[in-house]
Image 1 (cartoon, helix red, strand yellow):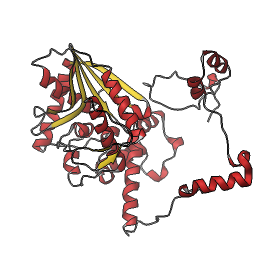
Image 2 (cartoon, rainbow, N blue to C red):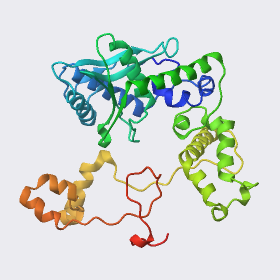
Image 3 (tube, helix red, strand yellow):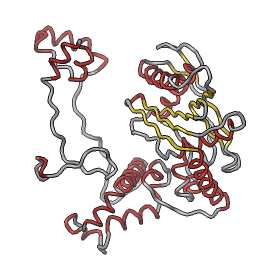
Image 4 (cartoon, rainbow, N blue to C red):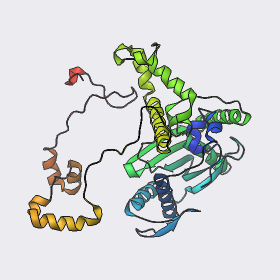
Length: 375
C-alpha cells in the first residue's frame, strides 16, 4: 500500500518531532507478520462492507499483496468491525469505504485512506480498524483527525457538517473507543498541521521527543536528542548517573520520571533491539553476548495425537488430563437466568495490587486506609 511522505498514520510522530521525517528517510521500509495480518483483515472488512460474502478458507489477495487464506480469527475480527460500521448506516447515509482523501491542503502530494467514513445528516463519522493488541484511543487521534479533514473537504459541498465523531475499533481485543469534536476544533488542528508540514518542507525542523511520537520512530535508538532527554530526566539534579538511587529522588523528580516512563522504556527497548542486531552480525559490545532465551519443555505438536493415546493408555483419562473450571464470565454466558443468579452469589473479586496510574485514570484513588499493605 502506498503511503504519503507526511502520512496520517505517521502524523503522531511528524506533527511533534518535525526532524523525524528527515531522519527516518535513511531507513528502509519494512513489514512484519503482524502488519501483514492486519492488512489482510482490513481487506476482508472492506469486502464485507461492500456486500461480499466471505467464509473461512477463502483465498483472497489484497491489492498488490500476497494471496492469503481466511482463517477464523481474521474473519471474526473483520466481521465485528463491519457490523460496527453497519450500525451507523441507514438509507440516508453517505458511505465511503477505503476512500483515499486528498490532503494536499496540508502539504503537496499528501493523502490518506480512511477505513470507513459515514455521513449522517450533519454528523461525520470516521472509523478506523486497528488489529494490534496495544490499545489505541480516539481522543485527539491525529491520524483520524487528518482523515476527518480530508472527508470534510470532500463532502462539504453536499453536506453541512456540524459534529465529527472519531471511532477506533479494535475488535481483536474487545476495545471500541469514540471521541466527539466539532468542525471549529478540527479546523484549528488543520492550521497546526499546515504549520508543522511547512516547517518540514522548508527544512526548519527540530527534535521533540514524546512517548507516542517516538514509539514507532525508526531512528529512536540512534537519536542523540532522545538519549540526552531521557538521561536528563533520569538524572534530575544528580550529576552522575552512577550515584542515582530511587531513594534520593524528590517527589518532583519522581513525577518527571513517571510522566516520561513510556518514553524512557521505549528508548531502552529500541537500543536493546539494535544491540541484538549488532551482536548477531558479529560486532562487539563490551560486556555483552547473545544467548538463547530460557524456554520450558513442551510436547511436539506434530505428535500430539500419539502422545495423547499413549498417556491415556498408561495413565488413564484421569491421569492424562488436567481439568479446570470455566471462568465466571464464561459460566454466566452459558447459564440460564436461574443459574446466573445462583453462581453470581459465589463469585468474588479480589482487591487488586496498588498500582500507580496518571490522575486522568477513571478508577477511584485508594490508600493504605483502604486495606492495602505497604509495598
